[in-house]
Length: 65
Image (cartoon, rainbow, N blue to C red):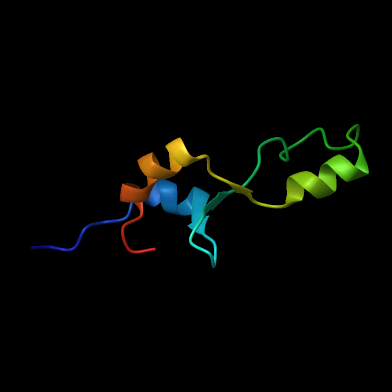
């Protein structure tokens, strides 16, 4: 049986944390950051966790990660 391939788009957008959760980058950081508050910018910097429904759907895309 050949090895399964990871979905390359998913691999660039998600990663597993040390505890086994799937993490993703939060939206809204690409441009127009000047008018947004500092606490908002600090909070959006951290990676977010995927919801349980998205986690179960995304798990087969990253079989070896």
